[in-house]
Every structure is written in structure tokens, then in C-alpha cells.
Image (cartoon, rainbow, N blue to C red):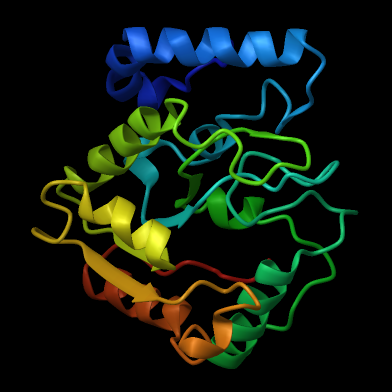
Length: 226
């Protein structure tokens, strides 16, 4: 694996990355790139979520499925795109719900780094994708890495919120033993995709609900402005 693991996550991920499965994943990714395939996000950005949100600072986890597969979109944070890149439809719907929930107007950009730096772990289940091929790297071994990250947050005594949009994120969380016990709070709704947002994502108020729980547990609210 060519990515450098941030210090706070090393005790969690070093054993995982030493496994045969992780070595196989790393070899497969190198082979894909050596064969001329474009992989998003680029090397150095694949663990960006962990870099911006240290384990001991996690307050909220928002799980995505896999990175955006268009040029310049993926930046290592679920649902986020760099400034200057057109805001994708799912993120536009997230912004609509944010405005309806907290009155925060949608920004012109899609960079969610401000959330990440406050303790919002924007983690995709699969951390790479082939250009133009959604879901192309699913089942290649990233699950072991991201399961370990989610489990590490769930194992902490500090109260955290897990925001699970869509059946994929909800199924992943249910694999993590103990997630629904202890101090944590789980907020579930349909995915913000245009295909499902009107089935219950709109009106779910995840941002105010997360802040209310964090405040009641002495962890401080998230500034959800972008």
C-alpha cells in the first residue's frame, strides 16, 4: 500500500495493512495503474479522510460507497469534490437538506474539508475507483480497511454520531459489532441521490439531530456551514 497512514490511525490500520489481503490489494492497484488505467482519487489522497479527521477527534461518521469516478472529482472525502468542480447531484441534495434543516445556504463549491477538520469522518467504503466505472473496485479488499476504521470509532467511549444514508451504508454499519450499543447515536435515512432523496432523505434533519446529540453529550456542535 503506497499511502501513508496518519499517526492516530496507525494502531488501527497497521495490522490490517500487514495482512495478505491488503498486500494483494496494493499489488492489484499498482498493476491496474501500470496497465494504463486511471484510478481515482490519485495516490496521496486515498486516505485523506483519515488525515483530516484523527481518530481521537471523530464526532460524526458519514459513510459513502465509493469515490466519484469523473475527472477531478474524487478527493478522498465521501460526497466531497474540490473547489472549482461542479457540485454532484447527491451533494446538491445534501445542501438542500442542510438549508431546510439549519437555514445554511448552499455554497457554490463542494469541498467538505471544513466538516472533516471539525471531526466529521467522511469515509467511503471503497477508497478507489477506476475512471468512468462506478463500483469497479468494490470487493477488492478496501472493506477490511474501512471496517476497521468504523469499528475503531464504535469502540471509543466518546459519544459519536453515525449518519447512514442509504442501504449500503446501513448494511456496513450493521456488520460492526457493538455499533448500536454504548454511547453512540445512529441516524438512518434513504440516500441523497436524486433516485431516492424524496423517499425520506429530505426532511430527515440529520444535521440538527447530530448536533443535538453531540451537545447533550458534551462534545460540542458541528458548524455545518461549508
